[in-house]
Image (cartoon, rainbow, N blue to C red; front, side, top):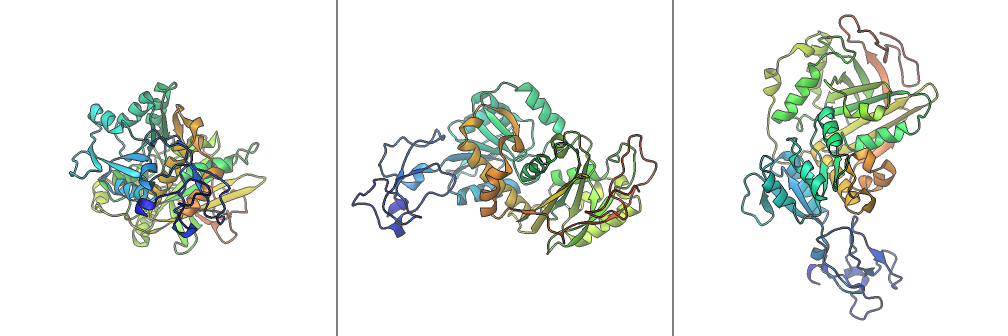
Length: 437
């Protein structure tokens, strides 16, 4: 059968045997009938879904698989993350249009320059959804909000800039989902799910996120890491060192010392915290480099380093890597302790997979049309996406006794600022109590 012809005519003699029927994969919206086939092979009544590029067909008509593919524009398709997004979406049956500043002449490439609004608007016309991987001036986001388009942003930008965009487009005809990757992204859904269980105590949120050795070695990634390793202490008092904690991750990562991540502005977790204390940590998945960072931190040097030593590690990767990734998220109150571990393979690869899952959900959720700017946790819930995420290798595990925070390493220098609150202490265990440093 050419192009996987799908028959939607119940009982028709022309219908191929069950083994030849290619059932449409998620995210395609289909309505099945009681056609007499095994459970996994039902005939399909085609109805036009939320995709404007899908052709109109009458019920009971046959359709080529290629006609049903929704179209996605990927902005920044030449970067490592952009390439991963294109590969994942193509593998999941999307028509992918690659947005490039210098098109390569292929039929799936189109000219997009975020400093040229007309090029962005022309490329976005006629696609079902846009995925932006470039953190530059919100050009694509503004166009989506004013033209009624749907856009997912994987670009990591400051919360103050995101809030400014929200305030500017309180009434919009389009929908932009910010923080739509892995972290932030899937982690937002997990944090939001944990916070929903804490209505009274306002417990402490702890999160530990990896800095992939092969994922953060571009110039922008290195600058982000340097900025958050060298900013003022999280309690407002300058310190050359950060607090640290050892967390037991699942193998092959195991026990890893994580360094405090001190953002200049409120981070994406703080937006979800609703007044709760937030502890953000990170670790580099290269053990040798992570040990070096830990030693510099203990000697009160890390927070004082200039940018150039970090830039020595700069490197470009043309293909997404497949390193093991573990992200720890927990919420602790006097009444209960909840924690989750997100495991997956490959930082950029998993970010692209998470974006594809969210894009499919956004495309087929009519109630999300014209909603303006949303965080991923405002657009989706963990319950909605846990199944599709697990299918593509992003698994959210509940806390297990052998996984947790089992030792804290005090690393404060200088006098804490007013309003300082104690965090994890030397004897603090996940089931224990806070011990001030």
